[in-house]
Image (cartoon, rainbow, N blue to C red; front, side):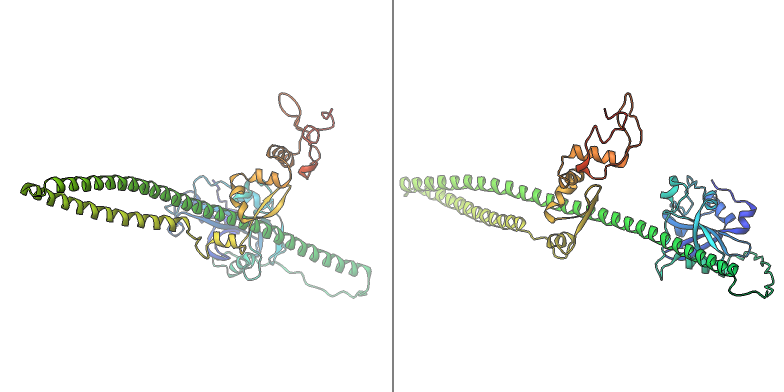
Length: 410
């Protein structure tokens, strides 16, 4: 758990972000109370909040920023297991943009001094119109937390008569311009890193959504197949019953014919004939109802077999080629999956990638293990572990040779 010191209290604050705007501000001591569970924020219940630690210079310009995430439970209390040393990370942050007081110390997901905490951080958006740095700077300048500002003493600029073309002045201008260019380069590198991180997150989110939708479509198809199978079995049972009814009907007809021929003038036989005719009529009506039901089931069966994919669905767009599913694998790179290959790919992505490389899955996995961790695998009882040269292409890799150091190749 983080504890707030008096120094941190007078110079530090925590901003909670909503989109690219600052939604709530608190001093460091207030944030410590949230972490200790003394108070909660009901409007943030069950929310993963993007927050920023803001350390300030005495003149209230920004000294350092740490972009971190924190979870609030169903009661709006901060996660009790949260324990990120954001103060220590702020002291070790790399140079970031100039927000009025020189280059700040910046810690974010793409620029974290300790990789163990990178997943608990987030990257600011530097897109014009959605710039988190500008929103934070405006909030600091507004000073709604009423920090005490210490004015800096500005030395009088006493004019000195010098030759404007002197080498010392020229060198000073060169150094200033060099520092300005270095700052611009740092900001551009940071923006590239954050954009790459956002792109990876977006691709991962799209792939996850595609997998979920594909699973839902598979479930729908499986349900339709099961319904078709039930209808088929029911249809067969109805046909069997119809055959039995037909046999009974023929037997009754034969019985009626025999009775009519032998007992035509007998009064008791007339009554029996009436009963038999009524039975025949009932059986005929039952057969007609059975025939209608069989026709209805056959029509429904035909509709299920020839059901079209819903228009404007993702599956229909994938089939029509207006939407592409892109996958990435080392050794293959980015590849657009054809519609007919989607199910094959998701059943075994690595086998699919291995096939694209012209090799079997086992060989591809051996190369992938070497690619992700290029060390010597020879030795007993454990691998040697000596770093070796990485083979970047699967087709150039030979197990037992390229995954061994010079000492163990022979």
